[in-house]
Length: 142
Image (cartoon, rainbow, N blue to C red):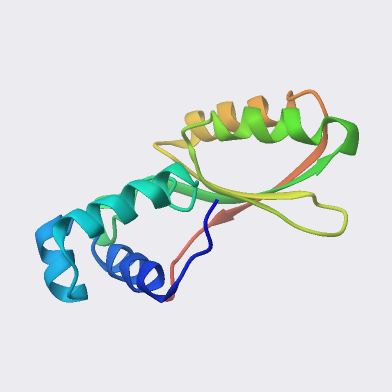
């Protein structure tokens, strides 16, 4: 994996602001050729810097979604298996490793309480997960 330079950082900042920006728009903003921008984007994807392009939905569209943060305690000998399994759960919008008792913090979004309950059950049954503590996200204040 190549080191990330300032041009990559600038490109990533633009993509964070608008992941749907065209290569032409990005190249004009950055003052680079379209070929250079496209090549850098492909390299960032290949190197695992860019994992996916997504939509951040806000407002009335997502007010009925069930959002939660789950803390998972994991048997360290099974950590890689647990990580692989969690990555395959589409309801998990972000997954972080952390320190202390809880080895993983996962943010989830589900359509309803039944889907949320199913997700919790699946997370709790993963081989290597010894405990799951979850907080529902109620009102977004910022």
